[in-house]
Length: 355
Image (cartoon, rainbow, N blue to C red; front, top):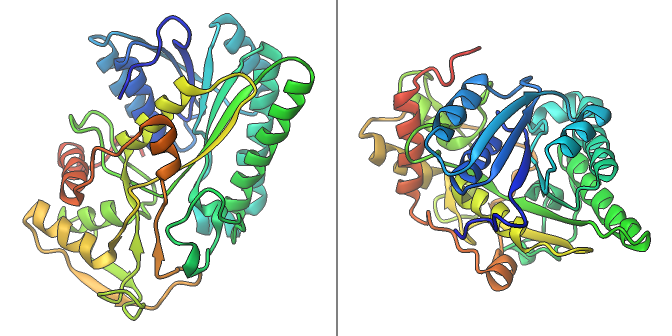
């Protein structure tokens, strides 16, 4: 990773800084010498993550401070952006449970889409010229087999409100970049569509702590740690080598480094879109075996029915960001990624422990 240019892009606002990816981004940026302002309403994030970043910042080359607030607070955000002379916003704050989005879609559109609109208004009010948006591969929906690996030109057809709420933000960014360019006020934005994020800070300072947990690797590790009875494998009759679904798992630090590379590369008037992933995948059973190897423990697995909307394979074509920015994932060994997640879980058996 190359460090952000301290003379031109040094002051960063990270929304969702108390969440899984946002906390790793805030930590990484602080260690890279940036002046980082973390922003989160703590409705789903963790104060413990903020405390961990604050502690790490004491010996880092950059600085970190935290403000509790909502991304829907246009006036409050604009005030922060102006007073702190923010150079770039990294926007991670969002609700991110697919199933929940089906049950309460309006909350997802209000928070993810409406919140991003208020944030963009605050960005415009304050004259901030760059924003990097945390999007998702869920905007692609269920691509046909001949479009996998998935490239950025794959049609975006979400199949749930979560994916739709993120795609709407991408459309807003596109329109806002064009409008600001026409008004002679260049604004640059990027949307990073990433696949399955995994792992934790290798030093175990921040990690993954969702309530409830729905991601495969931490669920496997919860079984290994005795916090969960068994893993349910949803479908073992797919057209894959071992019959289980194959997914692309990118380490959270590789993902964060991609955000930083994009942040540094953005030029006035640009809109960039990148997929972030390894370009290949591992099956559910391969992930399970990796977790067994790393932990040295038996992990009970049970067979369950297929889930609606689960394609046999999903993985990224991340060639564009590699060609244009030179980004390459460093965590390419699944056991290494799992090891960082296990280290966090062993050090924090109850997660951040606030709930």
